[in-house]
Amino acid sequence: MRVRFTKMQGAGNDFVVLDETAALLNLTADQYRFLADRHFGVGADQILSVRPAPAPDVDFEYVIHNADGGEVEHCGNGARCFVRYVRGQGLTVRNPVRVKVKNGVIELAEQPDGRVRVNMGAPVFDLPRVPFDSAGLTPLAEGGWQVWPLALEQAGGRGAACMVSVAVLSIGNPHAVQVVAQADTAPVAEQGPLIETHPAFPRRVNAGFMQVLDRRQIRLRVWERGAGETLACGTGACAAVVAGRRLGLLDERVDVHARGGLLTIEWAGGERDAVFLTGPAQTVFHGEIDLPGAPQPPAR
Ligand SMILES: N[C@H](CCC[C@H](N)C(=O)O)C(=O)O
Image (cartoon, rainbow, N blue to C red; front, top):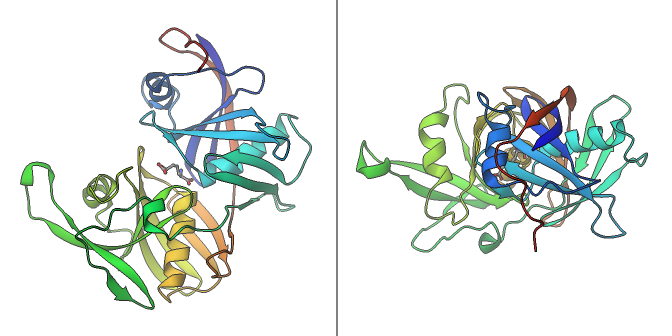
């Protein structure tokens, strides 16, 4: 099956964008994995699908699949590319654009300076909604909030276990954020997959490693659920700033230095206050590719 796509990136987090506004593609997990494959496919951290509005109060539906083929609830860097795509392709002239994501509606606005500002909605701290299973775990009080100590053990008991303390929250998708002294030398490759698959996270989790430079700047690396370490993670940047602010370390507006670029996060600090993510969105190229496997029958 031949599909047209657009390759995009936001602060180095890269995407294959599929325009499904005229017809749904009904791709399989294997086909999403193929598109994301950097050797046999196009190559991307996530696949973003642009779909028709499911209700009159939104302009589009925004569906995200990780490189491992699994559908996920949200992608902040992808949201910026989404609005760049739909406006650039003339699918809408609205600004901001309202899109339906799995757990709600978000607003995406192209700014005069060319960056894109996304209203990501309010963070979620209710542990069962992250979801996080805290049974058998005792939180540590930290700066007026709490962090959760997790034992990380190599598969098969190889190597010594180590303990990390993570702040746990959802930005529509699950995040576990730890404060580290130096992001550049943080053990992202070693600890990331162990945190991602820790049994306390029944749907796995994105693992953030945050170095606080000062109250208005952090350096952040994220091992993403279903994708591994990416050059930037939009929801991860939101989660890190919200966690840092609740731990008393950060102010309302923070510049997040990711490996792939700069993101700006704003959160007033109230549990019902929306988190705002501002950053770049670039189109890299357009293309077509033959997908293995037969087209799927429409979902029932
Ligand atoms: N890996 C994430 C989805 C993509 C998030 C990230 N690319 C962003 O910009 O928010 C998850 O499984 O929840």
